[in-house]
Length: 473
Image (cartoon, rainbow, N blue to C red; front, side, top):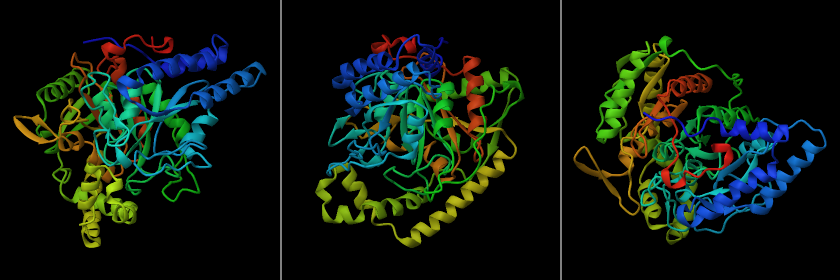
């Protein structure tokens, strides 16, 4: 068991900036220096916006000097996945086509800026967010801070790597099949996948809009909640937004009062030994606190071929014209996957939508009897860069299967989920996934806070990046 390297970096920054103990510019410069110095090693960013970020930080300092009240994220440097619009900055979407420079930022970004966060740069990703490794044909692979020979996961790999290495205290990712939670798991940090419709998708390049989500990656649950609350809420101009009121923050849950469900046969899937042992140990530790951990037979919650049919038809609609005109303008891996995407028909999609609905109903029935479902976040922790298969339980399998097994289904049932690094000596540590009913983000964060308070969930800093900015110490 270990102790955490940091609590709320965001709270420390905002307090120090608001109280005049430091300035937003000085805070930013520490993170800029670290980000620039590690770019060759990690390749976490596609663009570091030095001038724009310094100008934004200076405006915050000027307002404080004028006696203005600052927002809840005052001076906090945030990285943005490079398929989310930022006004005036090129949006590459991780692709090889000419980038688009939008005139307006996505609401997820403008809401953070309204809270006085500072956007520091744009993070690398899997091409068009269509994959789980962030080994990008055009901008090069993003490297994992725990071992630079490893993938940080994807598709929001740059965001996960930047947070884990202390380049930023928080970052934005998108999640269509695990693209926030997988890099959070492989990089040993916290990732929140929200209920579909909770954070606006306007200004976010789609992969499959009916299940796409935007979410934060941070070093602790408190910080995930701070970013989430700043971004969440209805957007009448977004067709996917749902006008459900955003709950206020909750105190840490009482572990002894919780009833948590382990879904079977979903969690009986093959996984590497350290993940299996960590999950079993966590279940025993929860029981020791007085929590009730129960096995639930939910045969519908098993990933199947319908999962691909229910997303690929939408992916095809996004890329069909461009791919048919210029398939060579896509990286080889993504181009081949897109060729497969176009084989799915409207009939396949409609059948898959019925499957998706039945999975959602089964999950809702199960969640009526427990506070949350718990699974590992990923079934394997180490994906070597350049290697398409990894060994799991004695078999060589496509790396995408163990990385997405526990995450992808959650998007199809539209529910929120929280990924947390467990308190183990493994490097990177195994990760726990908490899944709750729709709109239960605050309940999940409350459980996550309790797990951190009990030292069952802990964020550690990768050893090679242990010299962190003051806010992280």
